[in-house]
Image (cartoon, rainbow, N blue to C red; front, side, top):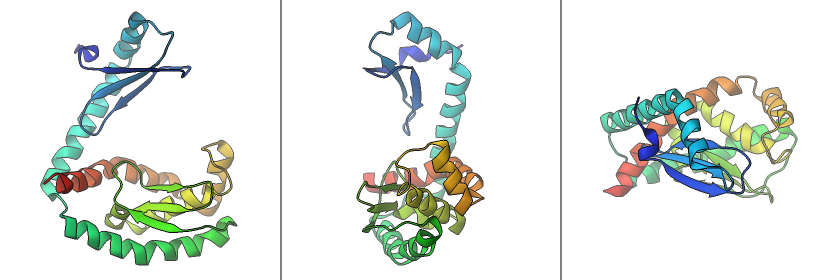
Length: 193
């Protein structure tokens, strides 16, 4: 069995439980409470070796897919942002009354880690790479962010509202989880050139 602890980055904080993350570049990050001993962390990582392996394989697959599809140029990213500026506000306008909320400014960004966000003031941000996904994925992200106008969390109540408005949410959320990493890698590869 591979020793993942040898290369893991451990970040201590006031959190209450241990957490693992495999980053886009294939690094293992362990988030641990201040009081946690090194031995307890090592045991946790050993127990999670299957999960770690699965996620490392996924990161490798995303990298291969992004390489096969090619990096997005600055011009292509700009074109996606222009398309998103025309398309996404229309979807927000359609879904806002169904959710029963108002919203503020809509901004399109080329983010490397988020597909959308909602501020406390009701301003909405969306990733231009959504334009490379099926329309249902865009709608699922739009509904997700609009539902944050009702619940600024990911509670059961929040997801009940999301599913009320968009019953296929989990299907398209899974699509984005499965394919989104390779899309983001295409952008970051283009930005690095």
